[in-house]
Image 1 (cartoon, each protein chain N blue to C red):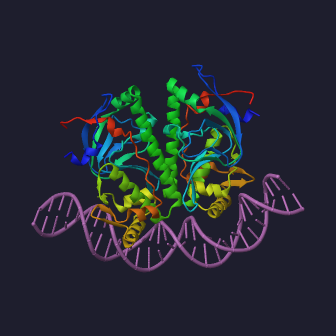
Image 2: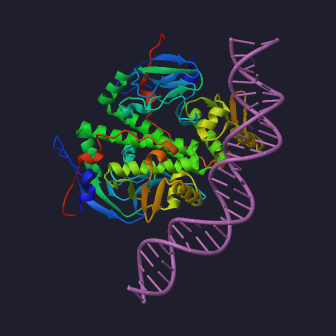
Image 3: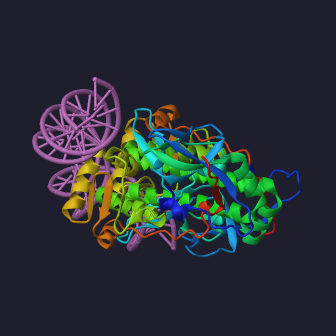
Length: 240
Length: 240
DNA sequence: CGAAGAGTTGAATAGTATCAAAGCTTGTGG
DNA sequence: CCACAAGCTTTGATACTATTCAACTCTTCG
């Protein structure tokens, strides 16, 4: 079961300090946390996609953060671990659940871990900056191209992409809520990308036929690699 | 000279620890920091507006963060004080300049100050979330209405608005780069808001005639008040 | 007073949303 | 294992929103 998750597994920690967590699974649409709560558990994602989102009174929805394998689900430790936006599973998920108290304690005791959390926050902050640029200034096709590149690279770095393909389990409606378009228009853009021979997208699987070109179309440049990821500090206690 | 800045001046700090800073001024379009740099000085804004922005290769610009009086110019302490996006003055500015080393030292020594920085970061993170919602899901008039409400409330909280009016010194082009529209369209939306008797906007001054209605139009809800602002820790050394 | 920048206007166009209906997939219960 | 239902994807027609381009006016500042 664990071989696909290998790259997310902890490396031996020099200081010997490690956070112990237990395996957890959820179904699609489950909430990891709801606004105002101070969740007992934080989750490191092993498999599956989740998001944070915001709603308008009339039902319009915007996904503000996409959470992929390797991500710590709760950036809200910045906010005293009090959740500001709902975090919801977009697919079935497999996560490592960590006790909030243990995370807080390790952050106080081990500066390198506290730095790691800071880096994690900075990464998410920068990602929101990219989203603002996309939504404000990129056309529909540029936005989708950029988003696909970003998702692919993140999955690749977690060892969840091989060659030029990866799983792609969210719907075009959810994609629309992510890139600020309607699902109908996402569909038209996707077809356009297919016609240009840039991607294949079917049966929950994305294949990027020409990454170079797709990246140019979306003005995508990969973010720097984080050499101090949260996953390093986490140990999965066997015997779920 | 100081009476307008009163609400930003430090209150006596219980612990006696205070960051000493000196008055600095800049002209429009001056840079506080450029990407990759590790600036020697951080700036607390007293007067004037600044922004962080991102450019596309073809010149399209998107403002990702608007920095107003009371804001610490450099959120990038999250990133080890290494600037990620350029921060530029949109108007002439008056700031309190702080030595980076002193800020770092105080953050290490005084937990309440380090919490304060965390809160500051969380506030900016949340503001980016709001921007993503606006750009992704709100119409042009809703975006502008929302932005005007947000700006007014922030200035009001810094004591820089009286009754229903405040200074408004950025151009419609810059406003467009902030809310993801062209300057032409911003102009049309502003005129629409005038026709509806919601605002007056002329001679660098904004008057909100009906805040209630404007807020409803933009789905604006004020963010919670930060009771541990950065400004509390800062002392302006006289004799610039 | 003149120049440069900012705001305003109109017409034409491009881009995206909306609405409605018809195929496809996928997962489920019989 | 099949058939069905629900949810996704696809298509077309149409309306609307925002951009583009170009000119003109008004402010501001030196």
